[in-house]
Length: 171
Image (cartoon, rainbow, N blue to C red; front, top):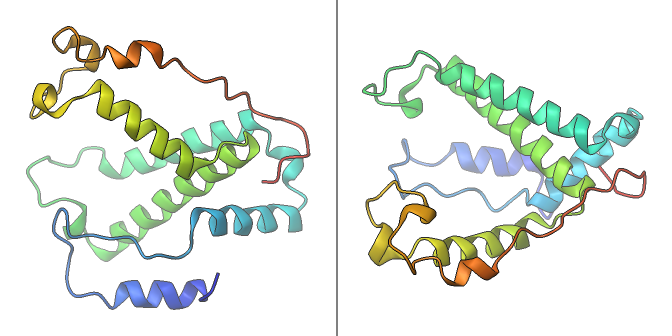
């Protein structure tokens, strides 16, 4: 990282007021690669790589998603939303989202999936599956859109992304 994570965090705190939908932007650092490296160093220092097989990382990820979901449980859909939560709840939200991201990046690294490239590929697939003229304002799955909408997608199959569970992968 060219800047210390604390500096990036402080810069983010200095932004004016709550973000409106569409105006929010992530800070440029740390990158996903920085997060992967930070977690890999953290785990290596504690000799935890032995516990970070894909199944273990996935189950940890699911557990963290459950903790994140718990923060939203029983909240009204009409209240202002997480931006208006009290500071303690906002801090818990930040921590749980961070845990989810850390485990997701660790799982992708162990499975040798380049997440930024995978996201670009998936967005291309989604653009073909959900053409704007057929899907705008609709919650229908691409298979329920009018015929021909996903014709290109028929050739797009799921790629074999077998996870490596050897100690060669760094997490």
